Length: 229
Image (cartoon, rainbow, N blue to C red; front, side, top):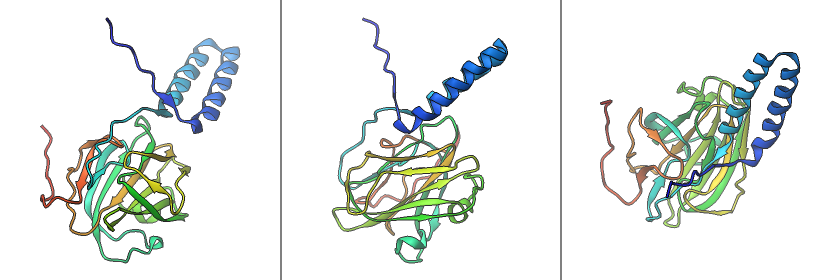
């Protein structure tokens, strides 16, 4: 028996954009068929951009999973966003950059509770730049695990991103891998780990939201390094 093709569902935020792309494409065909075909390609890209596939999330307590699909852009130490009230001491940070071809649905990294949410207006620099974490528009969440540790997950707008969507609410109980928002179009998500927790991903590594383990709160393993092969 041939394997059944699974078609990913589309995030509800995408349907208005897909409708606009389709309408413009129909109008372009009235002008010129070659131009209309370009519109078809762009409409298909729009559908692909808003895909929202299912993920299999590891459920062992203590694991921190990636909040975004993309490439690990930063593995360093930095203070969390000041608006979250987590202090100004540097913490281990993992930053993941999403290009316009990645899945842009963001997922909660740990089981816990949303302690605080904060929106910060800002610039729209290229999200691959490190300074984007502090200068760009962002939406931040402070999460507290059942073991009493806190961490932050920050959605950061990028060069072409102009809208951050966040569906989480303060006091909400959340689970690792749970969908909580997205960013349109091209962006970055940073996770600030509890101090003393080592990142288990390396620069340049690709992550899958809700699946890739980026840290283990309960482990004593040192930070991992990687190289291209």
